[in-house]
Length: 210
Ligand SMILES: Nc1ncnc2c1ncn2[C@@H]1O[C@H](COP(=O)(O)OP(=O)(O)OP(=O)(O)O)[C@@H](O)[C@H]1O
Ligand SMILES: Nc1nc2c(ncn2[C@@H]2O[C@H](COP(=O)(O)O)[C@@H](O)[C@H]2O)c(=O)[nH]1
Image (cartoon, rainbow, N blue to C red; front, side, top):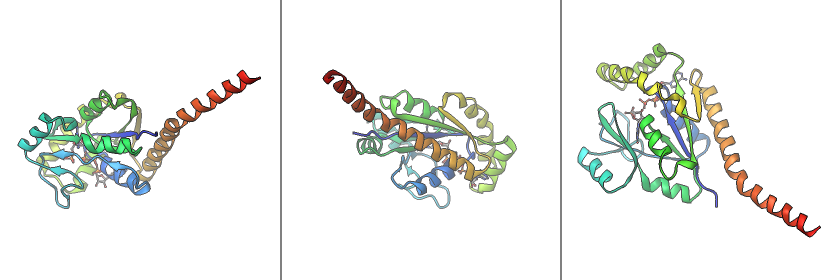
């Protein structure tokens, strides 16, 4: 039975993870997005259950205590975590799951029992000035929040080498194309294994019968 891949996207805030996730899922509707739980307040236009499961700190702690989180971390003063159950369901169904998580989440998923199915991708901005332009251009966060996120970007970027792939998101169309290519290649690698095992067994049986 085919197992689903766990595709992890990380980057400093504003480098383009959400944009790329949306595009990748438009390209392949079979990919499941891991909807995180968060204690942050919703931005304009964000829908509960679609972009995030918005919850209180108490509800978040209860989920952690109940073992319901595959990973969790404090990011920019709020808690974020990936619910475990939908990921396990998708894997059983052979569907790939896409995570938009920070480096702490990436590390925890990689080190979990599901780690062998992880494909991790780090997105770099072409420059720090462009990163700030994107955060400001998004028009969703206050000046203070943007400054906090810019301050943290150096720390997030310092984890780039822990990832399987690193993409510089200069042109969004080109980055999306590379992301698709990674997914196509990684799916081939996953799907190849059982076929080869069967083929080699057949070859050995053929040798034995000669
Ligand atoms: N290659 C690109 N060129 C120009 N603008 C881009 C590019 N990629 C993304 N953007 C824009 O940059 C802004 C930030 O992108 P996005 O929200 O996808 O970042 P993010 O990494 O998901 O941020 P966060 O971690 O805060 O959720 C958005 O307005 C998006 O349209
Ligand atoms: N470790 C986790 N990090 C997460 C999760 N969901 C989102 N994130 C990261 O938080 C920041 C901020 O996100 P924003 O929506 O407030 O801009 C960003 O780096 C996300 O990747 C999660 O479940 N776990």
